Structures are given as structure tokens and as C-alpha cells.
Amino acid sequence: MNQQLEWTTSEFHQLSGIEVYEMLALRVAVFVVEQNCPYQEVDGHDETALHVFGKDENGIIAYARLLPAGEKYDCPSIGRVIIRSDHRGKGVGHNLIEKCVSLIDENWKPERIKLQAQAHLESFYATHGFKTESEPYDEDGIPHIDMIRLTGSFQSSRKGYTTV
Image 1 (cartoon, rainbow, N blue to C red):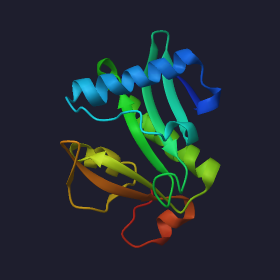
Image 2: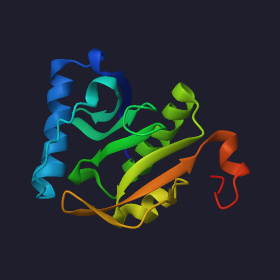
Image 3: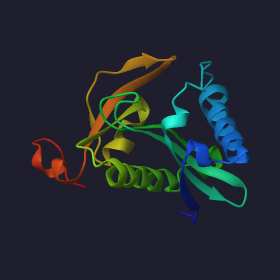
């Protein structure tokens, strides 16, 4: 069941103190505590990012961070993708990735989008047109892979990439 969420996108300077607190609390709860992965969650990239939130009356349910080309990679990237544990398996993640891809395409019109996926989520991202570009590697104790998605007209013009 896919519930209706209020979706917002904000630059860092537009976020309220409460939104920053909720965002960081959710990221730490999932990436550090739930996944038992001690690492520096606040990494210096939030100030240049677009922050995508799916909220209900109880706060943030879904979140992702969009980085412009040149911030971390030579193309825009999607990162810090989170669905709160009590809302996983309900289609919220698919909505979030669709929104992220659309926002990147609208704002930056890139040829491609990159993400570092946890390896067990490879097929999830593949349903959104992402193709694996690397062998699995260890990132903070969790197997990851690099994935790329061609955007817009570039997507259908490259052999091996599927139009979605």
C-alpha cells in the first residue's frame, strides 16, 4: 500500500532547524545505528545538496540527498536514500527515486546520474534504469556498487541502457 506523503525539496539554507534535526536523526538512526556502521555521517556535502523529503503528520518518512556535478563526482548523484523502517515495502522508495531522477533532470539536465548502492539493493535501482558500473566493494563495512543512469535522450541513445 502506497500512502500519500507530502513531498518537498529544499536547499540546505531553506531548511528549518527542525527539518535539519529530523533529517540528521533519521540518517544516524538508519546508517549508523540500524546498520551498525560507525562512520562520519555529517560529511560536509549537505550545504550544496538538494534535500528531498517525503513527510506525513509524524515527520520524515523518506529522504534523499542530491548532489550537483562536481561536488562528489563529475555528474550529479543521489545519496543518503532512506525509507523509515516502518514504511519500507510500501512503494515509498520507488516514489522517492522517481522524484530524485526527475529533480536532477529538471535542475541540472545531466547526461547521467550516479549513486553508490548497497549491493543488496542493486535490483531495486535497476528497476529505475540504473546500471552497475563496478564490482562490489566495501564501504564502511557494507558491500556497495557504483551505478549509473543515463537521463533524458541520452538514455535511449546508448546501447545497453534501457529506456524506462
